[in-house]
Image (cartoon, rainbow, N blue to C red; front, side, top):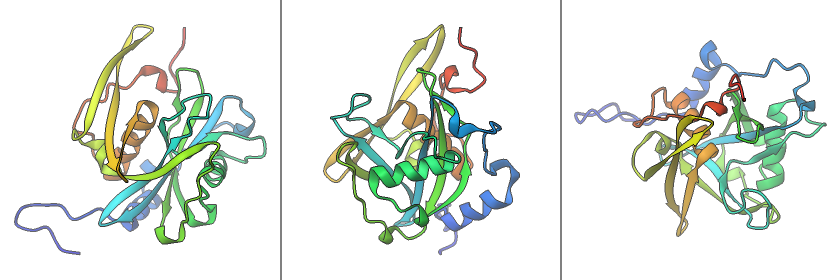
Length: 230
């Protein structure tokens, strides 16, 4: 890898370095729920933030939900879904759902951390699980036609930049917050990544790249697990 040149450009962040940092620093160690029986909790889900390297960038795997679905049809999301009674923890939920939705073999994914949960407006607890796909070539995407219309990837760092970003101010019970929209063109299609998915990816990118985004987040209070709903 080339060192920093005279233009002060930074060397690309490598997943091997991210992996070592996750395993050596207590600040980014896996955040598992203190619920002793989390798999039996109602209204719980987990999503997989699956990272891999491509052309010196760290990318994340995303899906466009099927138009057949009754909720969030046609929207961009991370692979994941509701917890099953058979799931031992959030990691298993995320990996199982990724296999069911996009054909990703759990054995290919090296889980490195679990982030703080996000709470949806509908009071569903969504737990983001970060995993590394070391060998992208070994993954042969197989979308579940009932749930997934397409599978695509995006550079993780884009969720820290102002480029191709829009925002909309919202209000919920007096809390004024901002929803971020990221337009990403790939495979001759423009995907709009927004709302909770964008919020999760902003949080993940901030941790992976160890810096805040180039914009003010102003995330909704109800995303926080300690938020009191009146």
